[in-house]
Structures are given as C-alpha cells and as structure tokens.
Length: 107
Length: 442
Ligand code: FES
Ligand code: FES
Ligand SMILES: [Fe+2]
Image (cartoon, rainbow over all chains, first blue to last red; front, side, top):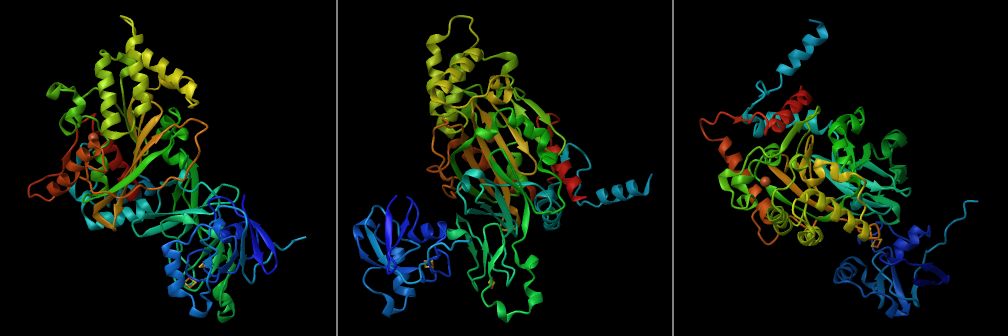
C-alpha cells in the first residue's frame, strides 16, 4: 500500500487502492479537516503537493473546476489538490496540510 | 356474527373496485387515483419489499437509496457488515440525506444544508450551531436517524416502513422456500437495467405471471409451432400471501428432441443473455455427441451441467436438478418481485410505481447467475435507464413483453371495456395477487 507523508508533522498515512487520501485518513481515525465529508463542496480538505507528484493520480476536470469555482483565489496555490479526491498510485507523495491529527488514544 | 367479524366484513366491502369475482379484475384498479393512494397507505407503507441487493453495498459505509412513491429510505452497510435502513430525511429541516448510490467517506452521513452529521449507525455525531437551539428541540432520540425494519434474504435487503410489521418470512415464506430450493442465495448480478413504462405497476407485472402469451408475443420461442403450441405446457401454482409460480414439467416428461431443447436455450442466450447464458450453451452443445439412442436428454443435461460446474468451482447444491424450477420457471413474491430461474441463473424483475402516478411504472430487470467461488465480488450498479423499444440496449424478449403493456393501459380507457377476464388456471396468479391486495387494503 502506498504511503503518503503529510507536512508539517511528517505524519505517514497508508492509502489503499481505490481510496482517496482523506478517506484513508478517516478510515484510520486520523482527523483530516472537512465539513462536507467528501462531497467536493467544502474545499476544507485541500492540501498542497510538495513532492513526488508522479505518485498521485492527476486531478479530474471536475476537481479542477470545483477548486477554481469554490476556493478563495489566495488559497489556490500551485499543486493544490482536494484530499477527498486525491488517489495515490505509488510511494513518495508528500503533501502539506495544516490540522491533520493522528488517532486519539482512547486509553 | 361476532362484532369483530362484522367489522371485518364491513371494512373489506369498503375497498373500492374490490375483486368481487375471482376471475374478473375491475379496470379502475389500474388507473384510479383514490385506489393508488390507498395502495400507498395500506400496501407500500406496510409491506415487506426488496430494497436492494447486498452486492450494491459491499463495503462498510456504502449506501443506496430506495424509493417507493414519495417515500425514501437509504440502506447502509455497517462496520460489522450488517445493514441498517434509515428514513431519508434530516430532522432539522427535512433535507434528503442520501441520493442514489455511493459511500459515506469517513463513515459520516452529512446533511448538505447546515452540516449536521450522523455516524453510519444513525447516531447523531455533530450538530452544527447546537447552542442556537432550545434543548427540547434537540432531544437525542429525535435527532438520531429513524430506522426502518430490515431483513436479509436471497442475497438482498428487504425493508418494511411499518415499525409494527411482522417478520419477512411470515410474508413471503411459502413461496420463498421454492427459491431457497434452487439456491437463490448464490445468485449474483450479471447485468441490471431499467425502463419506464406508461402503465400501472400491476398491469406491467401481470405480463410475467403466465407463460402462455409466448405463442403470440414471443413467436420465435415456439420454433415454428405457431398456434399448435400448447398453452398449458407449464404447471401453475398459487400460494397464500399473494405469491404465485409456474414451472417446467420436464421432470415428468423429459425432452423429446435434443435439437429443439438446444434451440430454445440458444434463443434465451441470444435473445436475453439470461437464464441460459453462453457457458451453459457450451455444456449443452457438448452433449450431442454423448447421447446414445434411448438416453434421457434431461439426465444427460443434469449430469453434464454438474460435471462442468464442479470443474469450474461453481456451487451446485446436491439434488438441485430434481427441482422443476431449476429447469425453468417463475416465482412471483407479492407485491412486486419476480425470479425466473434456469440452470443456476435467473432473470429477476422489480416493478414500482413511478413519479407517484397510477399510470406510470419503473421496471427493473436483472440477469443473475452463479459465479465460480473464486470470482471477485464487485459492486453491482444499474447499467442505465433505456427506452422500452431501444433495441441497442434491450434484448428482444423484454422488448416484445414491454410492447404489449402500454397498449393494455390504453385499452383500459376505451368505452365499453368491462375489465379483465382471467383464465381459470393459467392466470390464477393474477387473481391471487389482486385478492391479497384487497386483504391489505381492507
Ligand atoms: S471534503 Fe469537502 S471538498 Fe473535500
Ligand atoms: S436541514 Fe439538515 S442540517 Fe439543516
Ligand atoms: Fe413474455
């Protein structure tokens, strides 16, 4: 299973095939910011690709359209992707995203 | 007469356009708005109905919506692989929560209006703006999603909108047992598509409750016999609860002619891609050279099918070839589901009112088959909605069936038409369905 590194905390998340990065995070009880939970409505899940771009499936026209239309201009940095749509095909992808938290231990 | 009985009699008489004679169906039952409204209230809101196949929601958090008239529920696969069903409405301001089919990422059902959320088991997980509400407006038991009754049978999820409903088996048991005998639980989706018909849902489904329309509607299946085709070559049965069946009589008579048997199966494989499918045709063709003079064709088919299935890892329960239904037939489960089994495959139909209108229905068709055990389980989805006469997307046999149904619905309105008159035995299933409907509507 490909592993994605999330900056700034160097968090590593395994992503199963057919799954998106945010889905993988939620399935493994990480917190990944969102308010629409994968509906491509909130743009809150967006992250920026910093390295290993070849390990990510390119964005669909729909994802690009949503970003252009719904995300504030100043946040549309080069490499911006919606984590709820981002599928991974290999190792080495590094993205930056504030607010990602590892699972809370319930002990 | 006891008071109770008198009351019962009175309410039965109150069903409009009731079945007062077993072999006559009043025409208003197919278009009257009041009758349709009564069906909603007394039938659809209270009956067990097949809401989805398990294959539509294979993984945790997968969901599918099921609609019946204005009602909508959604079925969600739980983390433990069980299935729950929920009334499809946000308790805040009525927004529908799920549409079509999909998956709830992160296991969160999210309302698209103000963002309230629930876990996939229906428990409220987040109320945005909670402090803006009076606590009595947010009582936990009112904010959690409301469940409907759910049972699983025949690799499908059945629901009942009535919280006081009895068990599924009490509703379909007598006829469902016939399908258990042909291993319905092993069937998976080969293809699935639908059409919209300008006809009452009952009118549409009655076209499949008898087999004797084959002579004129599907002339190719008579292999040239024309009007000499016997209308009574099937065995017909009815069951308490409105169900019915017909089945092949081959166990009593065997096939007389190998080529005729092969040609009729080939017509199903070509004209339907269901019931008999390509892999069955290969097995059947291989028999020709193995048949000695005086050999039973039926026994040869059973033997070769078993040998093939065992080799291919396709489950085939012991003795299944002694079930007439395994050879060919139909089981209708009241109110609106059909299975037409043959050789470990089956055609299936589900018919529902469409657009909340008595003269429109939505007609779904599945080709089901038993795959080898090793075959991967993929998510089943509707291939599409195609016009009833779209020959690129519908096989010949359903096109032929659909072509009569809208003409019947037109005919109902023609001055002087008195209502259907039914054949005593071959159309007893239609009468049985209507009389059960009257019991429900009373
Ligand atoms: S989760 Fe809302 S857009 Fe990705
Ligand atoms: S209508 Fe659903 S949260 Fe307001
Ligand atoms: Fe037919």
